[in-house]
Amino acid sequence: MTGPSFCKACTVRHARALIWAVILAAPPALAADDNIEAGLTVERSHLKTRSGTELRTSRLKIFLVEQLQPGLALSLHGGPVLLTPARNPDTAGMELSGFHVGVGAQAEWFRQQPFGLSAAFDYTYQQTDDKQADRQTKISLHTAQAELAALARLPPARLQLGIYALHLDGDETISGPVHHSRSLKAKRSLGGFLQTDLQVDWSGRISLRLEGGAQQAVGLTFARYF
Image 1 (cartoon, rainbow, N blue to C red):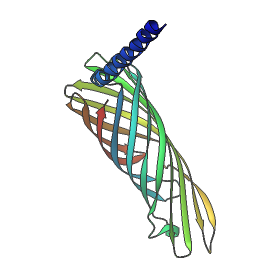
Image 2: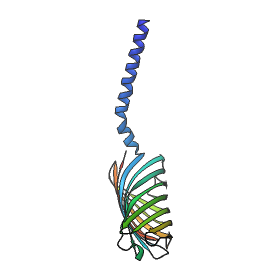
Image 3: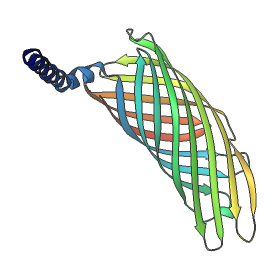
């Protein structure tokens, strides 16, 4: 019995050594698949609401994207927010800070061709507040955005030109000597965008995005594949 037990122990040790060798060798292969992307985006936007209030927002978006299959990906994002309401006497002088979190989905067709189509959907929840003297303001926003674009692949760059539909459902609550709450809706729901992606090397990109219409926005993205 001693001989077989000894051989079994040796086999287990050899198997463990082989598993560790495979794990240590795995990262380059995973990176080559480019199925996970992580990065951050710096955004600045200006949106008009039906009530007349203008929302000027600065956001830092940290995101993670996973390719479920070629041409289809899901994403998670979140980060800090700084919101400055304008044209609203109730929030004059206030700068609201908070956070945002969200999910998204992206699809792409004709991936092996120089020209193709892309579509995306994004949902974001954002909450910000500020307090000055005896006034406190809280703004919560639910934003959904769907887009469709034509794209051109000109290695090492990719260009997207498309349209988007925006839905904003929010609440502004002010408490203090005067307490009131009102809903926030986007004044416009349609717009267009232009995005340029530059592949800096096999594992990273830099992107610039410009939006007009429902909101005026600019975003700069730095991302890496893993």
